[in-house]
Image (cartoon, rainbow, N blue to C red; front, side):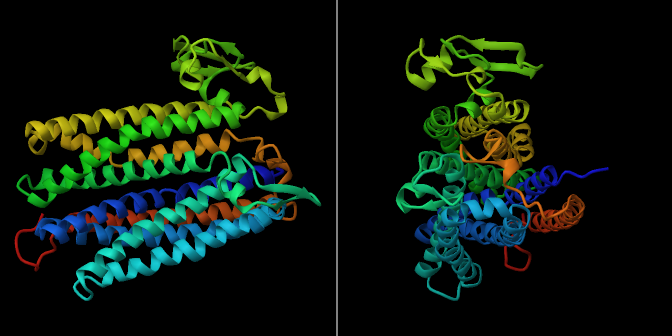
Length: 446
């Protein structure tokens, strides 16, 4: 049987980056929530927030280490499996990836060590500042990674010379048309991940010990935080991002929204199943004109459909469509769950409502899943281009690497990732079972 190296290279990249991308949203969101906890603990001298900060700092450290270990693989993959791509974008990607490593990763990792091991060894002000730098460093790292990926989506600041893209304007390349909408959308998603992560753990602790004051404070902080940023993800960040996608990558937008024919008064599809060739929507539930209104502020405006593009430039339909609509549905669920939690918090019933506490706990991984869905929609929806409008994926892989070699590496990485994932879950469960206040530090354990 002939193994397709292009298909296997794509599968390997999806496996490696998909697993790695589980951890940065947790690290970023948790770092900013930790900063809030540290600030309250420092300014108010609240012992509960001090214990919460120590507890979640340990979890942040574990998450960071696993995230770094899984991210190293991607650097090698570019040169090994995607040599033509690396040659094409090397002049563009060199600067942002170097900036990410020098200005962001070392900032984050250096201050993370001070934050984790400097407690009670350095001044409170320096320790708080180290937490701030961890959050800022993680965010800067995300920015430069998004810059590189956004350039693939909407190339700018380059000229074509000798069959490769060469940088002519660093500013235009960095602030290409999709960078800022994608950065704010992604950062807000990370904050939602952090909020659900803290809320889910706090809910579990309260189910085990309903009298835990520290768990109550963690849950209160997390649900308020989560409700605010879940709303912001819907509007303005989600709305602005999808409008920019419609402007700059109309094929991706049409596939994701299920707009197969160019039309005015385009409807907003609430539910449907894409099927057939040519594609159509089965069992559709539509609201007429709303999509035109959302994109253009005019209910009669025309929205470009799949039929307007050459067949060899149309992306796959099913994965972007399902990922996008699932992401939207989960986003609405997050607003509803956090909204209900804030309402019960206001009424004084949140800490004793066991069904809701269980729902919050079981919802802990859903924002991470939603980030994965967003990544699938963004990357699969860009196909057949690896650099939109410039380089197709079929022209970007390494022809010297055999399908058998790639398949072996996929299997090897999968085994390693299963091991790393298991270790992470084991360590996470151990920390949670240990509670906010470890035995031997006085007081009860949670």
